[in-house]
Length: 99
Image (cartoon, rainbow, N blue to C red):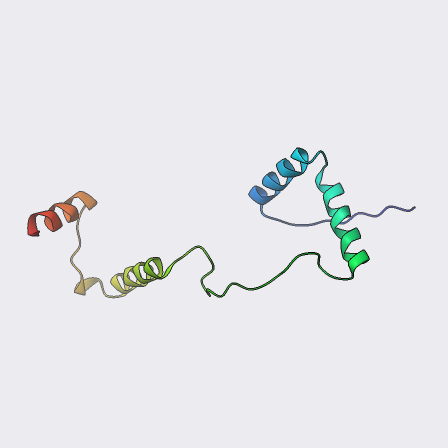
């Protein structure tokens, strides 16, 4: 059977993780992709579910984190409205002394 080359671009860290996992399975990335391709052709579908996250920001950020990021963006847009501190320690000292 004639062979051909299939080139894939991916994140360097993802490739390292993928290569390590394939090695744990006793194969290399080429073998893993061949198994995937054979399953797709045999089943005539992607052999696992592909779906978008319900969370537009992805699964990384929860509502509290998104609110904090939005607050930080607001502070950057309106620097006069918000008090600035030279260090985090200065800000914490003021918060703790006001409590």
